[in-house]
Structure formats: structure tokens, C-alpha cells
Image (cartoon, rainbow, N blue to C red; front, side):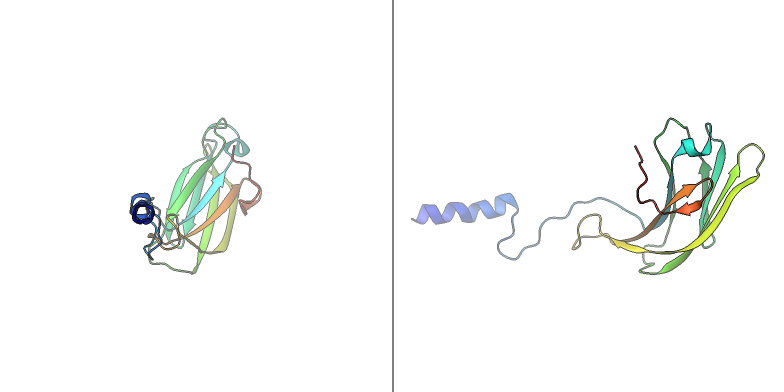
Length: 148
């Protein structure tokens, strides 16, 4: 009887299970607070046909649209880690890489969503928003985008 009780109690620390109120171990994925835009490069024409500029407040990042053979491309503007649940101004400008003509210009306000990449009780806590970038519609919802 004593052996039957001792074996299950030894199994708990070996498996990492929490029967005695200890929390589960956290993964260690790193993540940043950010606003991102994703797009299909083929929507913008040939290789690097457009320049995508994404701004959050006064901070901007820019890159070319990418190769039409790639299923998707993205661009992110990093935010302060302590930004919290706030609303931030977002601006998208797409210009032609050849003539620098503006293809589309759009702006909106993004409500940041709380994210816990390692689980709700594990750090870090990040604040994010993601948009689709479209050559005709500007900033769109990324919902329903087939990024494959």
C-alpha cells in the first residue's frame, strides 16, 4: 500500500503537473508590442513595384512590396512595451517604386489588443493591432486573408 501511494506522488514533480498549487512552466517566446500590416505582394504587381510605409503616430517603417511569388509580406512598427490598452493613430502610404506617385493613402485609429504569447500567467504581455494593406482599399481587416 505504501508503494502504491508513493509512486503517484513522485510522478507529479517529474511530469511538471500541478497538483499542489504550483503554476505550469512558461514557454519563453519573445514578442513585442506593435502595429502590423500584412499583404499579398502579387496584389501590388511585379517584384518591388511599390513602397509600403506604415506609421503609428510619428514612428514609421518602410519596405518594398516584395516578390509576387511570396504568399505574403509584412511590416511592423514597434511600440513601447508599457503602452497598454490604448488607441493609436495609424497611417498607410503606398507609393510607386518607379515614379514615387502615391498609389493609396489611408489612416485610421487602432485599438490595441492584449496578447500573451506564452500564456495568460506568463510574461510578456504585448499590445498589438494588425491590418491588411491593399493597393485599392488601403488599410483593411486581415480577417479572411489567405496568406498561403
